[in-house]
Amino acid sequence: MARTDRLMRLMDVLRRLTPPVTAERLAAETGVSQRQLYRDIATLRAGGALIDGEAGVGYVLTEDPALPPQSFSRLEIEALLLAVQSLDRIGDAEITGAARAAMSRIIATLPGDQPRQALHTVMRSFSNAPERQLPQIDLAALRCACWEEQAVRIRYTDLKGETSERLIWPLGLSYGDHNLMLLAHCRLRLDYRLFHVNRIATMEETSESFRPQRVPLMRDYIRGRVNKSPCLDAAASGSTG
Image 1 (cartoon, rainbow, N blue to C red):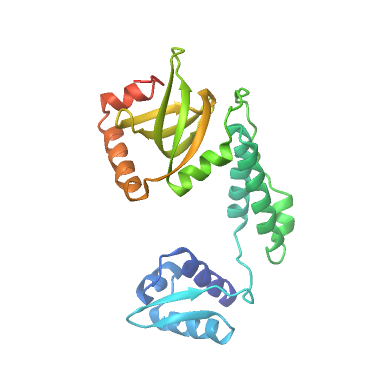
Image 2: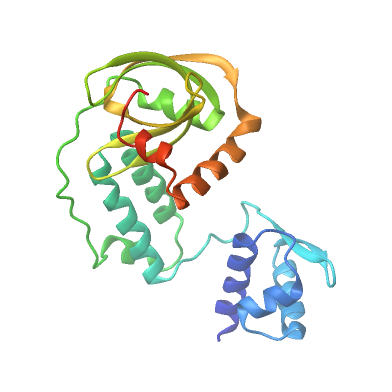
């Protein structure tokens, strides 16, 4: 492997893996001996890379705007652009726009011939998904409630046409081909529910936080899905129970 490629791969591994990364792990990931790895670390440091740590402890890369930009393989560039194109089918213009803006910034910083490669990809994604019914609530506010782990009050009409109002803990959004679904923990039923987002008529933000509970709730939900819990299957039907 060429020296430049080897150093670029080392930088990529330092960015990807959870720090501190041991010399043994770095050597295995880059395919060199530990002796060569130490020399490569020294070379990167001499070139201005801020790499903290030492042998026997592990290494941590501190990003610096003066460092060269990240590089991607041609297949990685194709995969990233294909993923962005695929977002059209979820029907969320804000998410799609954000992805395209982010991809534009990535392409603008690619070194060498890679920006040209990004403009001439050979893979394409075409969506045949049916048009979605637009949500009645502010999706940005709903996403924010999920991120910030804040409870919300909603008025919801289920598939049977029955309307209810309840306080929920929004856990996550699922973008399928036909429906945008909200996984939440209903504080009225003290159980998990899957809501069709386009059936939520109103949503009111609250100051109630469920941050300490989110991770254990998600673990419990996943275990229930693996075990095919009847209550979770019923929740998926969109009932207001």
